[in-house]
Length: 596
Image (cartoon, rainbow, N blue to C red):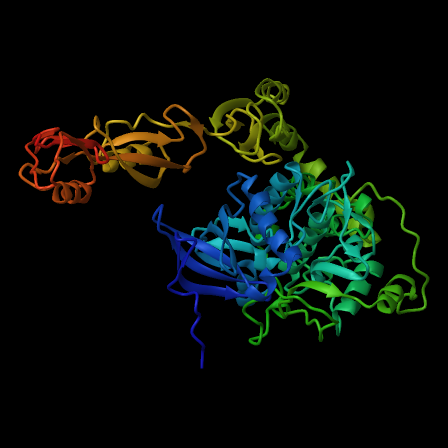
């Protein structure tokens, strides 16, 4: 019997209503919710309370929000907010209806080449934007690739994200890499780990994402992972000592070009891989242009279909010791895997599992050099045929089409020069950005590396810098009118403080904090000071001194006396201000007694 989730129905941070549990992992639970302030559906990722007390996990969780907030890309799941409510540390993220790539592979098994590339290209575009912003994802896998109902692909869960030049998020020297396997601890998902993520104290950079993207492509083309074993340690051993096999060995419809892409992306030495996801995307698109429609749409063999027992989801978990078998079809958790020192030593020094010495690996600058000899012969034959039959057409195509050049991070003038040099026309649009300095290029449409007709316009998005909004003049407006004015200005109303005022009518704004004209970020709260108005002075004539003092005090005034009441039996003969006049509270009212 399912237990009731105590978070469902609650309001996090006084703003986010938790409505439905979507997924549960070892480190966090994701809910569907509503931002009651902006009235929009959000995904709420809540860290498990048991981990919220761990400063390391909490820091990594918060770092995800800060890192992804720096990105502005259509293929990245946006993070809107981060906060804490008691023991609940949470992220408020973009809600993406649809399913994960893992769900797609579960239902269909291996994909056609066209379908695989249609998924991988936007994934690489998202990772490329992160890499050019100095961020590394470190947990690229099918569970973190979301596909919306209308086919848009988005990369999610930057929970293991690291900023280049930091050690797991903590500032270090000016180095552009860091170690992720220290003291026997391996961070990530075992089947998608690059070798340098396993080695102790090995430097890592954005090429760990390139490696994982190569594994992702292999899995989409074949329906299975390249390295499997009875436990995570065996899988890590294969990452260190065995090359990823060519996908065409399982899916013959895959050509030598894609074999080369997988081999290059999954090179065991980081220097042999493409520099980042942008470079891998450009190489992938070059290969795609050589494929015929029949090659793109060839159905994978039936043997690559999943079994009915293929699991439906992959939890995120914390593993403290080697787990059980890692099956090719089974989802596998994101892990903090504590590998005993003796096992880690075996991973590094144990000979290969067959009587062949471990080869000495040198730098291989070409992707095609990594192909077996026979595929190279076929590739050469195919190239010769294309050149012989379609040389003239290819030349015309190259004159009319070309890849969008890399202009991300360039200023507008430099981007225009680069486009002009490649014979392309740019249309520049400006958007606000909290992370990209004003004047620098944020994105292009089509994306960098995409092949496009040179006569078409390339839309270049340039940063306007941070969006800042001037606080409107709210003095003289009612509280409701002030709230509407703040909403129109894309600000929000904060706290409201009342005070008595002898010049401003009751319910009217006296001032705001921050004051009118100050520049704020969008959705910043602005506090209001609202007049409580004035009150009428009560009539105390004819009362004794004690009764008059009580009546004035009850109305919020103080009393001053004039005249001499020698025997204490006199009555108030007059007062100032007169009865009924409106004055601010705490005003002194003078009462006069007759002289005896």
